[in-house]
Amino acid sequence: MNADGTGLRQLTDAPGEDGFPSWSPDGTKIAFTSTRDDCSNTGAGGCRTTGDIGPYHTVYVMNADGSNQRRVSLQQGMLVDWSPGGDYLVFALGVEHDPAGRLWAHVDSSHRRGGDIEFPDWTT
Image (tube, rainbow, N blue to C red; front, side):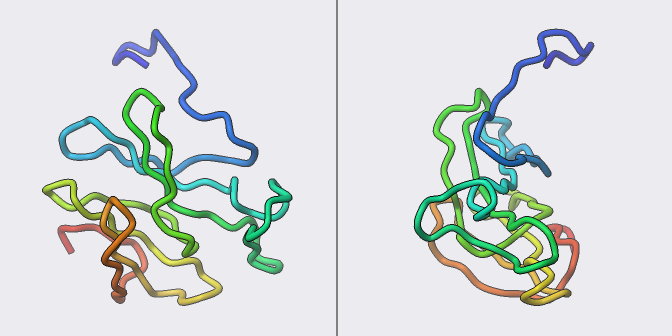
């Protein structure tokens, strides 16, 4: 949408919920989490489930216009933040795996590594 609230446009339409958006530093991409891979939203093989603590969120990246939506990791994750250069994402791991964890992932889904904070931010 425009800064004044006009021009509202939907960018995603996958089954499930998409949320927790984070703009890339250069404004060309948006990282977000989605429950589209949760077994309650898809019958596809390889779907994910948390068991009983809510839907399984996975991290996606798309162009700012909503095109080229792609999953960055199959690891459950939320609360995404970008590196200053826009090459990496950091996100909190799902609580059933590690309540105080984080994962760093390259935007092209390579080069992952763990960390130890609950609310990831490149400034901490």
